[in-house]
Length: 560
Image (cartoon, rainbow, N blue to C red; front, side):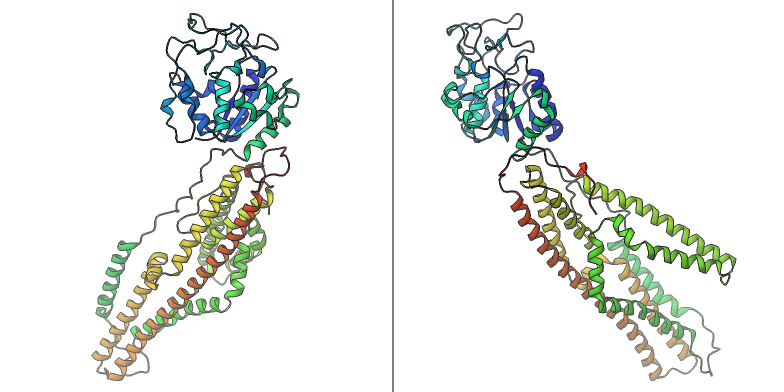
């Protein structure tokens, strides 16, 4: 479970310990902070729980109150001394099974074991009366120590044992000095705790609570992992019909067109004139319409460098910034539409239809604006977000740009939370780059079926319509007695032109998206390597004491 283990001795300072526990829980999460009273469950084997949590913790805070090193058994009874020796509860290594940490026998007085009774208090300096018995508790029989024996000299004292376990396990141990407390010298400590005297101890004073608490939290942030989980990407909006259902529907419609169109009745007004059959005219118009997407895709490919530069710039900015840079285009389009509606050339009905279309477009744009603004705020405050499996260029570039902005606001050395989140996001970006590279290596058929199933279906139906119109034209020539080989070859050429236009458009689009994906994988891979090196450089050990916790994204707005 990791987290922070708070080691303390019960007394009049317990309220300060409770406040420390609450502050750490707010910062790192309740599950990441262990304090015996709120954390131990009723009926739980406390010896096992304490041993397990010390073994598993990232850091142990030793709360030192005035007279901590000189706290003594007021009654002269050596607690737990007559029962079995609990030294086997000390985990010598992390792989030690914790079942060895058996609780003391039922007839032993447990006032010194966690959780002790809530009525324990300081009897006065310098000695600590931390062993007041609950009513009805029996005093254990067995060895007695001289009156006033020091509790740290007792090998079975839980405060001592917990610190021993942490030091032996190489844990980060942070002694914290309360009001009036002084750091004990090595001579005042048992041999097993003398390493504690060499640790720098921050103070936690009531009069300077906020500033001192900030120093404590900042010291813990380098080793303690707050409780966090990556946020899953939003579900895709709306379900798209695709796969076998779309293929089956396309096949049925294409077959109907191929069979039904040639069977439609035709007039023979064109016979004996220079006019072509209307079916042939329609086939030629369909081929002409196929030229439009081909020209558009070819034009984009010609100016691809300028388009890519503009796209790369717009993808790295927030939605608000994008709107500020592009709003004149949208306003211009709306004004052109309104001007066309009010010119009077379209008629009342067409003008109303145009205004209705413009109104719906503006309403949808406003709804999209609200949604994207909220999405931007959420992506910044709730960090990190998992990239979707099918990530587009804008999402991937925006993720890299956000991480770059976060690192700009962070100060070295990074906290453990920052290191882990940045490392997780870098790994997620690397996974997305690998997926983009695999997508770039797909065949043409797989690309069309996965990315553009409706486009594939539309081109299939369009070519089926051209072929059906050509067959209908051939029937018309045959019925008019003008069916010659030359005319039939011309009809076949018309169909072939349509097929070539469609294949040419798809081929140019396929090569363009493949080049885009390869370039994107190369660019993002380079950006990721530079960000990873930057995170590694900012994760070096601190050379100066941090005086405040690291800022979190939700504490400040995303910069422009």
